[in-house]
Length: 295
Image 1: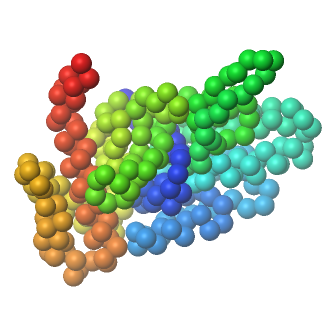
Image 2: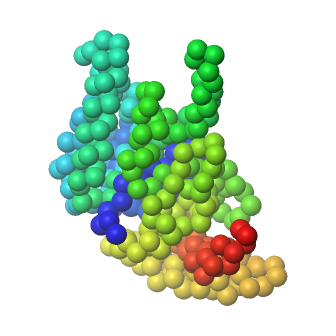
Image 3: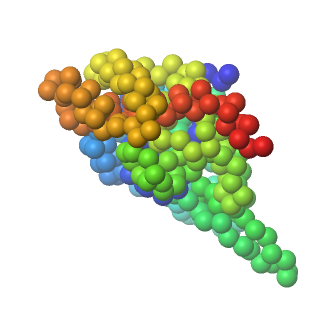
């Protein structure tokens, strides 16, 4: 197994994508445009932030990735907008298709640096919807991809990473009304080389990577959460056997034991992680049954 993961989440729910990264990697360096990380206040956590300003683009980020090299994870937030900045820089240095050639070179250099780094590196992107392109009386169907400039790069970019998850709306379960989708889809490029996750699962990359066997320690200030997440997830698993599980009752009772000693935002974080851990563990225990259900 790789010692680090390079991945993408893309799609709707801009705030949700960013928050899922903060939950997974609170100790990470978040690289983004000014104001991109204001939403971290939802979790009551202030991450390390490097703002990309002015004419800075992929080349600047590539240098940062090389310098970090395993000291902590890296999240490149709103990569689609940073890509626009980078392309504009390239267009000032070259004309026409040569500008896109330069853009592609800088994209490859960034991915190469991420691959060679010892850090987990994740990108968040907007979505480019599926579309049909007509040329010379022929119609080519292009599936949805992360939103990146270029003719081929939107499809090539996901192929160069370990993990490409699309954010989709789903309010059928408790908590956040979006999930991550990596299962086969005829209309969108997505996939999971971790090979341990259901086709759709909670927007909680930390829990997903724990299932995949990665060590994901929390920062010292949040280390107290682990014991509570584990205990509550077991209570939720026991409650799930009932015909009508009362998850709200289980979590409200559990939260009362630590709510007075910790921030309500951190308490909510614990409860969300506990629910997501229970969901992913139930999937692991049902792998064979889920496989047989396809026949």
